[in-house]
Length: 190
Image 1 (spheres, rainbow, N blue to C red):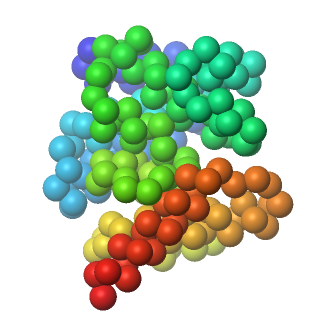
Image 2 (image 1 turned 180 degrees about the horizontal axis):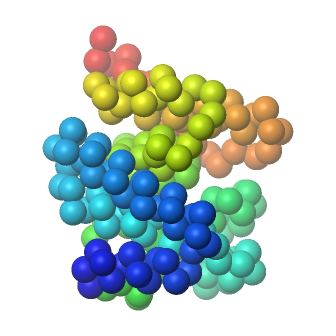
């Protein structure tokens, strides 16, 4: 299946606002892929499909998680985190995509994790900073993304954790693992 067909399939399942976000993430991911020497075609595919399950009803997402090999403790965290892992398991079934790097980029695009590949970092970052987004701290992330992928992802991780703490909601452990890993990498680069 080509990207045009993928976009058409994604358009059928996403609400218009989410679909427009997806197209912006795809453009941003390709820009970042060029900048950081990551295969652009893989970045584009991962970005097009990263929110494929975003508008699925909660009960449907829960059922996918319960009937899959995904960690069941995922159900203990905010439902906003469920769509990435569910979309990652639908890649092979609905798009004939069997690529562990694309699968991981989609699965962890909301939480991050330790030892992310450059493709995973690009989708994590593109989702956060696509041009339609606007919130405090974003200008620094965009500026940093021009020159330092790890530091830009560290800022995303830090900002996200701070935001969630201010909201007084639970935070998935992978978010902390990502933050610690990015921090360690930055300290090693000094």
